[in-house]
Image 1: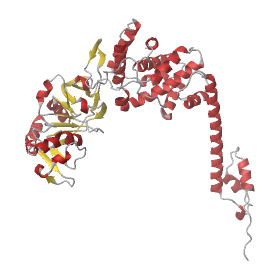
Image 2: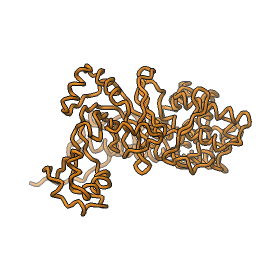
Image 3: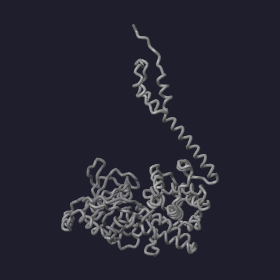
Image 4: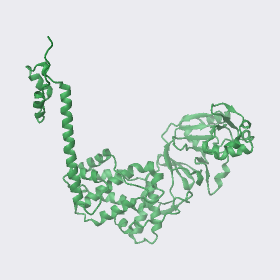
Length: 490
């Protein structure tokens, strides 16, 4: 006889849900209820999941309600003063019953000093507005503290992202748009506050580059003596100070100031090599970037970049295919087959962006890369290299390349790096003479900084470099910078 189907019963589940405030679990309940008919039992795992979801939903509802209350209170407190990061700031202060955070006067002074320097650079109109609000709000009021925190969040994001965004942010006015930093770094800051380490945290966001600090000191001195007649010069120094802040102290690595046409190689704080360089022409600028050397290539062939192929080589080959032989160029079709320059109708590709051929120049004394290439990861395919035409290093204006950096003393740089890799000078000469292409991994950590600084202070003197790319030519001190307020904190 077919068993009678009994309806699903929720009595047990209701009892369990009503007891969520206790420490009992569903499994405890069913272990104790041995008399329950298995046919009336419910899926324990499913019940636990439903209860967990119900608890999570309730917790989310409570959190949302608290957040809305916090934002409402923040709005009430800051009725005439807009807050950039309303949600984050409300959450931060609600967790502290709206008690002040900036109790460490040293940390506060450090931050305002750096923030005033940032404002003086002109790259953020909103930061200038925020500094004015901070300055005009009585320090004893909670509103002052809230404005400090709001500004600090934007400053944190700036310090974290500016090394990668320097090319976008540091070469035009009002180019930085503040964003909320990650929750992880906000939590790190608040943890530092709780552990009386706020000053250390604020200091960690600054730059230790001595040229950055010397430049800020000069701006501060000029403002303190009332020398604000040359605001444009002060502004230029402040802007270049921000460009310097992304560069570490000159202790280890290769540093190339693009407009100075100079490369400096430091090891353990000592200048090991100074060399003239050739950088990208204004139409093909060398980018501001950071990378690390990965290997030295001795007798490097040159794989012609697509831009140079279409703009430079195609017109030459169209006019005279024999140029390929004179320049030791190997030409490959789309399938990788080597073809003769005479078999290609180059004229059809003049002024075309896409050319269905790949060209590689053979290694040798006449190679565009010279005898050495210094590779480093770069999204722009930028690297350091030698050149067969060393007479160009005697020019004053050396913005002549297609973007890569040509090094006058490339042989000396290669010798230093190859020696670190265990090569003798005799081995280097043998490999050079063989014309064989040889790649040698870099053994030591060699960061490479390509930066663009046109005005700075070094050893108490203002230094300058030509603005070869015109980044500064149209920049005047923005009207939204209040130099009196900047001087107050700088």
